[in-house]
View 1 (cartoon, rainbow, N blue to C red):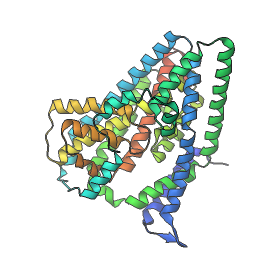
View 2: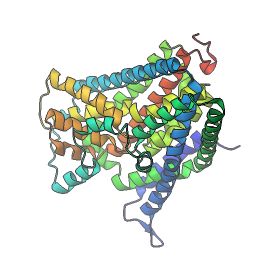
View 3: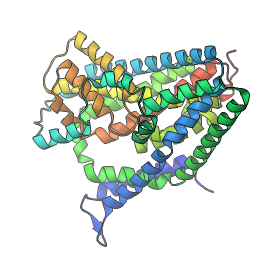
View 4: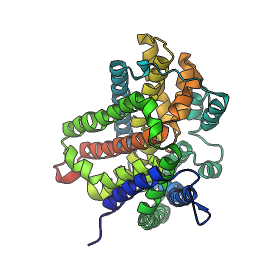
Length: 419
């Protein structure tokens, strides 16, 4: 009997943990660097997933918008989606703020000087971003060249263009509308079929990604930042299994059913650390597993993959507080509130790709006057925490989809519609 995909992925993660632990960065077999083989498998898988993201997002949003129909319905859906994303992100940030103030992970006396090379690496990783990036979020929503935006993976611009395109498709004459809608529906179906093909190789890709990470960092490096790691991990777990479970329950949806439906998508999000790359599986889980209509899922999920980053927002807040504690800086309530607001705003514009949250952390540190060199301390555990917070990001998007669909009267998980 063939194992289900999520079990194959889980086994791949366990095997990768063993392989990555025992393989050194310079380990070779028959003259071939073993970590390079891991990198090849992981990169090939990630590239294959990212290859289909732009056409899938555009087709999904355009078809979803065209299916929604009237502007009143669209306005209601947009309002509900925005309200949910703001609420869930705020809950995540406050959860992180509470735990970092209770645990005080940075007060263990960890004050490590950050050398020039480490600082340069961290600056390179945040791609030279600054606090002006908050304004750039809105500028990127209206790209001057949609083809260039697609080539550079500027998701906000693509989403805005696709929303407008889908909306005005519904304003065309019947013949033209049917022609365009049929084309984009065909593109969407082809992209989903390609996704299913790529996912057959997911266990190999996941093995490569995780094994490469552990072969480079090892498990010993986590010891010095154990308090920070535990604080973030605990906050992410509280948000995912308590905050989101309560929201699902209030909406009349069984949290247990939703966790089960999302297991493959969550494992993929964890292993790839990319909410954008996981989007095809999230769409599949929400539509086929939960019973959400394509029109709702295609509107809520692609938008969420770009603007709803619960785990990222939580991490940004805890990271800023941790750096302040490490350097012995006392932050007032007003400063902490500033961190909350900036974390909420910057999480909206962080791309769904690995390590992108370091951009937002740099913005927060600059805005509240914390040492930017502190980013170097975060690089030790960033990859594993990035994987965890990506899973939380994806789960938050899926909760939005099922809760909004339920509020629109859809038969989610066999429940009775709300009317």
